Image (tube, rainbow, N blue to C red; front, top):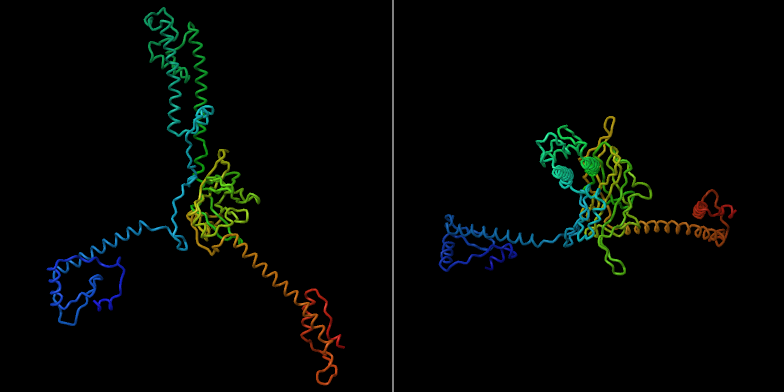
Length: 500
């Protein structure tokens, strides 16, 4: 056992093989086999087998082989079980390895632009009937087709029943074979014929077999009423179907947004960027871009505001929000002191819980109707330190757009600090350069004054003989400093003239 511990290092229990429980008879057989064959199991847990320098041993017994294979199978099963447990309890880690538990945020606006909001407990449902036209237009296609068919079928049946009632009350059904009897409507002999006459009247078909006579003033009034109401039903239902068909909702399907938003440097400033493009050759007239930050917050008074909306500037002050959307454009939001991302760093971005809703509005060039396309980006869909790949190239006579690179991004060097910290660092650097230059400028006149006093004290006398010394044709250090003083705007005297 001492030899085993000295040769093989200790390993954790999770990596060791399970030890089988054996009977006394089996243990004696294995020990005897090992002694006779010269094979010693030095580490049964690790499965290592060491052979001595004795004669070649015969192949091990089948019982030992089965035991070793069973150990391997059990070890693999136990390792898989530990792995599944580790995967089940594994927590999400951030970019810097910080353990964090994060639930998936419920989207306020889906990627396809659908608002994930449902209205419930509405008691004033009568308000929908006050705007019945918009209500019918907002219905889905199955309900719209059902209402369209039922509107015509109900009116036909209603007026068909009235025509049958008139024939029944006047006794036209009792004088079908009497040629001297003048009915209200010729050839109406039952409800089916009355229903067919109602359809011919409302749709103005007029086959000529069933006609109204001049001996029925009630039928004449009913004919006028049905013609007027039929025209109104036609106008209403055809108008609803036309508006529903011509809605620009499907036009928004060809307005695409990038899957991710990115944050990187632009002109030494952190910017939040996303890409938008139009797949059709017909353009969006007067395209306008807006962006909103959806994030819950709590006020200083303790009021909790769920899904608070904050405006994100995408160039409203400079006019950059008005787009000429001929080719894909990268919309940029400069993170400044007025931005909601002013204090947000890369580490904080990974822990934040917010949603960015982007809205593109414009008029469809073909129909002249206003179109709106929407999308959103969650916090995990914002890539820090990335930039969009270029997708435009110059071909022969035109510009080629490669939409295969529309969603592609690549990493760039971007500081991980917030925009506030980046601005403070730049301000400190500018201040350091300013004060270092100004201090040097302040020191140069002082050196000039000190140099001007040195000739008066001892510069004119010789230290050895006391005689004055004249320097001709040579510039001293004092004159060099005076030259620097003249460059800084100060007046310096010529030392050679003062000595003369």
